[in-house]
Amino acid sequence: MPLELDPELKPAMEAYFANRPAPEARGDALAIRRQIESAMAGLADLPPVPGVSRADFKVQSADGTEIGLRWLTNDGEQPGSAVVWLHGGGMVFGDVDLCMPQAARFAAACGIPVLAVDYRAAPEHPHPAPVEDAYAGVAWLHEHAAELGVDPARIAIMGESAGGGLAAGATLLARERGLPVARQILIYAMLDDRNTEPDPALEALATWSHDRNFTGWQALLGDRVGTSDVPATAAPARAEDLSGLPPAFVDVGDLDIFRDENIEYARRLAAAGTPVELHVRPGCPHAFEGAVPDADVSRRSQQDRIRVLRSL
Image 1: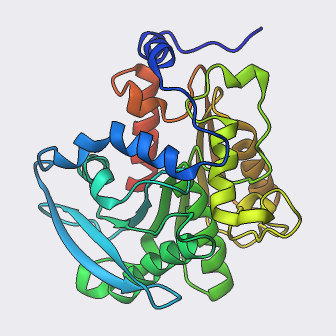
Image 2: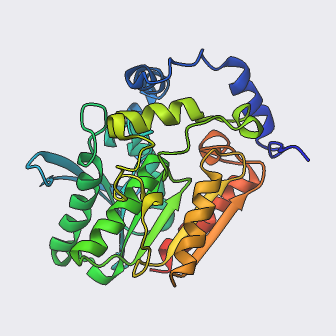
C-alpha cells in the first residue's frame, strides 16, 4: 500500500507541493538558506507570546566564540526543571530571532523554562562548532542553575530536525564530559549523514528532500560526508556505543526522510538499556505540525512532547 498524507494535512501539503519553488542545486547551502529564511522572514516580527518573559545571555563556545542564549520563562511559579532547545535548519539556516515565536509558544505550553541556543550554522561554521555551541548552552545552564531556580538533575535537551541531531550529539558530548542530562527529546532528528540518496516512496512527499539533506551534511562535514571519517558527535547515528545515555523521546512522521534513521536510533538506544518512547506518526511529512498545527495528529504530537517535559 502506498504511503499517503494524513487527511487533515493533505490540503495544505498538496498546496505546498504544487507551489514550492524550484529545487536548489545539490550542494548549494546558501541557496537553501536564502529560500527558507525569505519564506520565514515575517516570523521574527510576530508579537510577543503573552505570559512569557525573555532574558538574553552570552556564553563562550569551545573555540572561544561568544554565542547567544535566550531564556524564556512563564510568568508565575517555576517548576524547577528546564529544557535546552535547539531549532531546526538543516545545519545551514535559522537563528534564535527567527525561531523565537516557536520557542516562546513552546515555553508557554509546557510550563517550564526554555533555553534557546543561537548555535552557529554551516558552511561558515562546520563541525564541531554547532554541536559545541549546543553543549555550551547545556553547560551554561548547569553553571547558572541555582540563580535561575533550576534543579541541575532536571535539565533536558530537545531539538527539532537539525536541532534534534545536535541535541543527540550534545547528549553524547555530555556523557563523555560527565555532565548530567535528564532526558533527550528528538523531534524528526537529522542523525545520519549517509541518508542522501532519494527514496522513490518518500521523495514526492518530502518537505526536506534527500538533495537538501546531502547539501546540509556536506556544508557541515565537507568532503567527509558519507565516509568512514565522520564522528558520532556530528552524526549521532554513527555512534558505536549508546549505553549510559538519558531516557529518550523520539517523534517522527512516516513520510519523513528521517523516519528510518530515527527508528533505528531509538531501537539501538533501547537495546543499550535506555528507556525510549518512540512515535512514528502515520501520514506525516517533515515538520508537519508547523504546517497544519490544528490537525489532530499535530495536537497529539505536541501534547506528547509537553507531557514528557512536564514529567521532568
